[in-house]
Length: 238
Image (cartoon, rainbow, N blue to C red; front, side, top):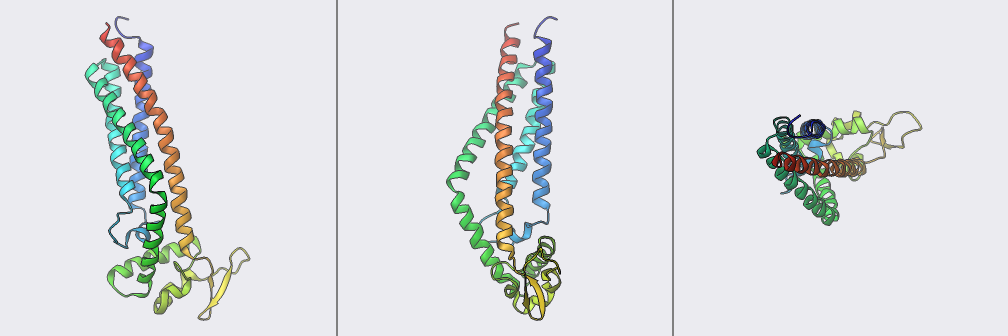
């Protein structure tokens, strides 16, 4: 075959096809997290100047860009287009730099993010006793969260609900099993576990998942840079 080695060309195509799939998965996962009801309004409804979904929005953008780059890489490999391969290389290198910068910023402001989350949840606890439209939306989200994760209240437990406890009574009710710790409140057995610690645990677990995905993606991106540059140079030397 005249030109570039078929093995290298189709290896590059296969790699970029996997890269495109990775972008699709990241985009789908980020959109799911963005629209999912699990903890969405609990974190987001405070509106205290910090957008808790900024990281998810970034992932949506990154996933879309990776899909485009994967397409460029596939077409560049099959058509032996130096222009497409160069665009793929530059775009991939920029994403890698952005990931490194995001990782450094994330590690630097980890304690600050934890403090902001804690303050936001404590402020949101006040919504449980209110009757505004915003408060009712938050209360609906909390009721669903309590029923799913078997917790009650955000900070102080059932008393966080104040006069609105009658609306949350069923979701706070403690099952008659030894698995859960219960305590009496207004004539009902309610869960001792507050939702604050559970939300923090969920956030920490999601952060660990994001770090793992980012590390694996960085390895794939470095391989992509090597493959694309080797193929770019071979095409130029024909």
